Image (cartoon, one colour):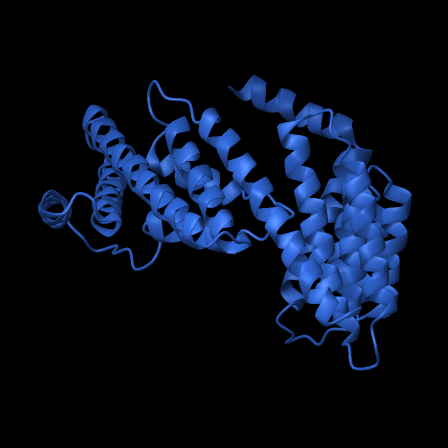
Length: 340
């Protein structure tokens, strides 16, 4: 897999974890050069950029910034070469070298994060160790002759450590701000995430108990929402509960929470999309279209969400038609085969 392929993989496979991966995502975006990439560089420009990055690296090879800069320069150059139909052996050699330095960069970041954790053992520092391990594992998975599974296993163990800290920290906060709905909702996330990673480490672990504990925490958060809590925020707690119930395998309960979310905030974008997405996942096309259509009726023509909802309705309609007329698709495929 090339650097270009890695970019596509990360774009299409952002796994929705129960923990918040904002820092991880930012690291990926920075590392793979999405910020400020030039579309006017020539081959000579890229060669100069790589040469300068090599000089900086040779002067200070233990500085993560210089390692990352060299990896990024090589990755951008490989993409340029590929886009301009360069010899594929040259493209691969450049791409492989970029992977080598990305691997080195994330290795340095793991060491820095580990040192930070040893100095201050808390959720944030443990989480960063896990994040960098995961990123390095992904790089190794695309390097010839390497397998990042061992690093992924380490990342999972660090995430268990991180989420254990998170649960403890939130429980401490609750002793000072008893029944605060936002803290309860955060604790629900942490509880479910901890269970998820424990199950990843040990398939015999009963994660459903943690999911239902998270549901109960969400219900406490909902019950403690005062008049000062925005309906959309309260609706979000229902959506959390729905997600945990679905993860535990109870879609009936999940649907009840999604519908309660919509009842709480009928015009909220997230509440509408959450229910529509749930229904679509169950191939309940007519109900999905109805939810989207009802929501669209509340939007003005110039609302920023109007166009996307219109497109979503058309998309679901096309899925419905394809499901109802599978023979048409088969006939179209046969016609295409005949034409070839």
